[in-house]
Length: 105
Image 1 (cartoon, rainbow, N blue to C red):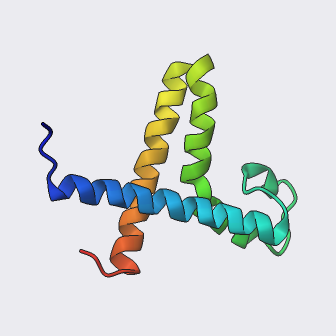
Image 2: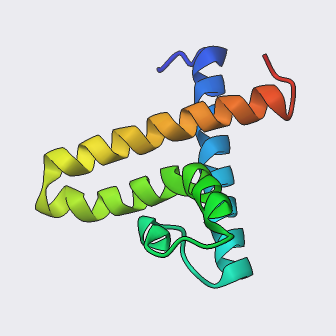
């Protein structure tokens, strides 16, 4: 039987909070302006460019993880790297949300 410590549950909760917030931000941006958050938005700068950059930073973990599944078939090393980067980014984002928004330390 696996002995699960409360630290491991807190790590998983931080990753989940980061992924959920990342997906929610990307979906809200898509509903608001009818374009997906990606790097092609910066080809022609306008007044929304700083807001687009902020949305891209906070919605990147979901994009990385979803795209990593496509690369796992063709280029496994790149897919694993993207998956690990997306999980690490969502962990950091989840820790930020839990500590700053909810006051969990």
